[in-house]
Length: 259
Image (cartoon, rainbow, N blue to C red; front, side, top):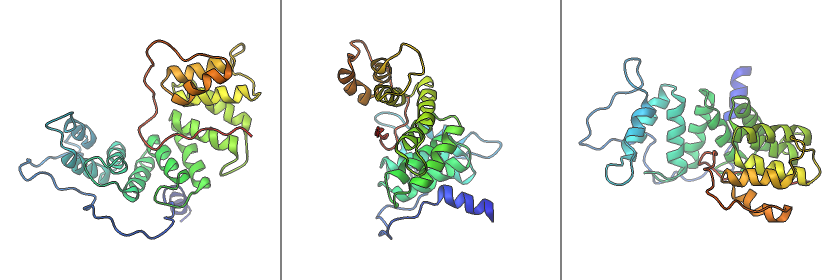
């Protein structure tokens, strides 16, 4: 019973209101009538997420509906990446009407089955009140699980909550460590947030590296927030090509507030 209650706490964010059922079809989308039966997930077959990825391509030939069918089938067989892929299609209205309810359920299953990215994105839905009441406590638990699982963005979002005292006590020192961990792992927003903390008087994790340095690191990793803050703290945006960001394409990351 205690395990069930804990899982409900992590994954069962309570909807704010009872919303009408959208006009979208069921979660399992039928494949095109002409498509041959596709088997995936069983011990003798390939992973459903890998097969679904092969159906997605730019231009003619892109088949999001059959891909979603495969992802849904894989999720039913506890394939975490399939659950996550299905959630992304629902949250991004990719081939199906947007459904925060479906995305919430699928991100939760991905998290439960061991994919930390699912924990992070479900935490973002909780903190941003997407299809549910804002729940800082659950978001903090989910970000903790994601960070413990090695997801840099989960660590960065958890650090934001530490700084702002959301879902628990404020912990600026813990936030600094988490931003540093995520920045080292290549998460641009974490580097930028580290710069803001250093500008506010926090000790730099690397001697001689000031706020402008960390903002430049974030900017170089594709974080627009870091680029926008550089001039304020005495730096310049990079003139060369910007490295791609490492954050997933889920809900927008949160900007830290320094108190």
